[in-house]
Image (cartoon, rainbow, N blue to C red; front, side, top):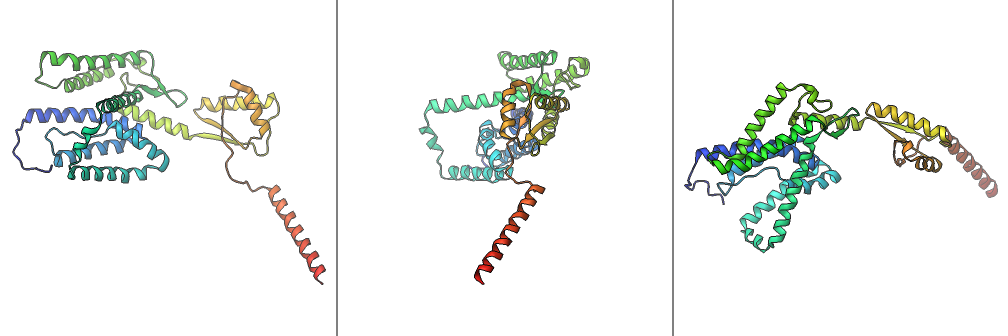
Length: 326
């Protein structure tokens, strides 16, 4: 497994070309899988680099390639969502330790017991995950600060470039195998994208974008902007307020429209059952997000008066007991 000094046939050209191909393909892939897993894209890029580096140094096979995978992204997304990113790194280290143990114990032969339909289903599921992870590249920030699918000329240009990339990968091997088809497709489409961004007018670009062909940087900026906008939520406390008629619903709807135009969300808390009933009957009239009442008590003058009243009653009870004892 760790036979680092065994003599092997070397092909510098193939090694360099395969390394460049994997490196160029791994950058957008690791960023997309980072979004799927719910972690920062920087973590995906660092993970892809170190995994490839460690595999190249200590790998047991000349053609072994390692990097960000959709299978791990789907598995860890629940872990990150429930326990936070601080549990992700120990879990990944534990998975690596288990893989080392399996390799040292030569348990790889047990994979032969897995039926072929199971392996086929796993690979197909992974292909679906990789396919759906690319949808983030088709989204841009809209006027409300939310992520929305691009449309118009920007969408058709993006689809044309995708079709061109797939055509090169499929047709080039039929003419020559001197160069990897994937590498040629990446380099050619990347150069074409640079030319389109520098030559086409910005009116062909997506909404709130200056480039016609979206880049990885544009995707990162769009996701960061959408996350920042989502955090800007306005909360209105109805602890001392009640909505009883149509005018109250119209006032709430007017507030919701104003905040929506600014890319903010409106939350209503401490709603009485009557308020909730009226909001449910309003249907599409009121466009707000009704938050669940938080599990805490608000210190008010009413509570303070109630506590003083309880103290006075306890004091009078104590005096009555003392008189009875005498």
